[in-house]
Length: 226
Image (cartoon, rainbow, N blue to C red; front, side, top):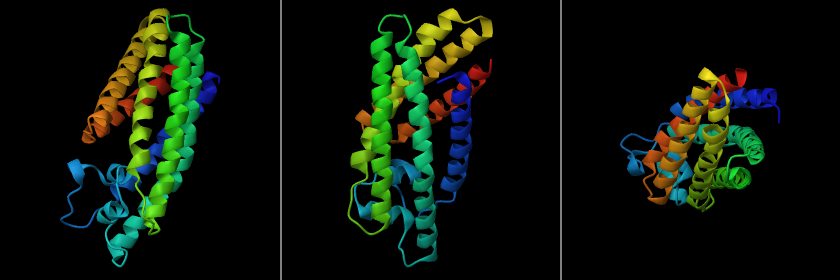
């Protein structure tokens, strides 16, 4: 994929992601509800172990608040489908590019990144379907898809960081080189911190790691314009 294609995908991801963040802010659990590990409602829904957990997040279907929350959560899953396609294409393209580089281990690292990006996308799709099923009244565990989704996503960030740290940083000039270094470090720290959060079940840390990844994507958009 050429840089222009990546720019359009990145732009679409950031715009769509921004809209989803606004929608997530309107998702309000019933008063007095304390979610596990003080997670934000959307992340809590991705890690729900049962339909009852989803009910706790959105509230009873008989209430006006519960109906509004259900509508918001459904829309978030629908909007997530094109978002998944976008990030899968982006990180697959970065992985393919990385696999063509000459630094030690580049081929393996790039191909593994492609694989983990696709695995994260598949798990993410299954996660969205599980949430929609739970909202429809079916008994289902979303966490069995949400946990591997996040783990594969953070592994993809770790793998992709090598492209910037070991290829772009040493070969680009002046500010481009330093920007590549910052992007690579953000991806690496986000991936390592996020993977540790998933493996240690410290799910609140996922929110911080994901924020670092978003900053890295913003900087990547700038980098591709240079």
